Amino acid sequence: MGYYFPYYFDPTYILVIIGVVLTLAASARVRSTYAKYSAVRSISGMTGAQAAERLLHASGIYDVHIERVSGHLSDHYDPRTKVLRLSDSVYGQNSIAAIGVAAHECGHAIQHQQEYAPLRLRGTLVPVANFGSRMAWPIIIVGVLLGGSSTLINIGIILFSAAVLFQLVTLPVEFNASKRAVARLGETGILFGEELDQTKKVLNAAALTYVAAAAATILQLLRLLILFGGRNRD
Image (cartoon, rainbow, N blue to C red; front, side):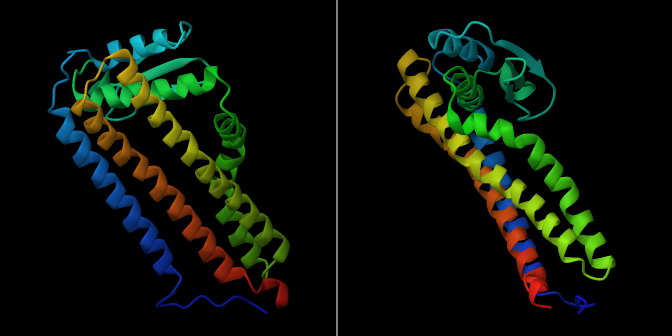
């Protein structure tokens, strides 16, 4: 039995639309929150790069290099090379938002140093998730074109499930990094009182983007299961 795809309306597209809306809303939230607290100068006057260096050293980490990269909010920590890269909007800025983002990336460096299990698991999943997200739909489409090959369709769904698993594992990694960041900012005296509450708002808004990404991939997986869930009964 073949698969039927309505020419004019596929109700499962609603799931895709919901995922897109969640992702756009989360992105808008983080942009507006970051912009708001980018205008608030920290009492310490430290830049993102200076705060990152102090946090790393306070955590006993001296082998992580801090580099400046172009872009806006392109900040990340590379555990393979032990390089913490801060974007133009963070590296040399002394705002609450810049320090918060820099501290979050330091949180990942601390996780790496302490061999935080979810971070290690996420690193293991990266190549599988990348391959799965690229190849899942092409394999499924080929399966459909070959008369509804259950084997290929199942492989495609399994590959996409790996991408979903990666998104789910990412959540505790990101939330934990933010928790570590706020705690260390307070312990080192880089931020004070209300400043800590403000940077929490920045990091919480950023965390929503990961929640939205996970929700969007889960909805896409649900759509795949709805579209092809009856294949073994056909």
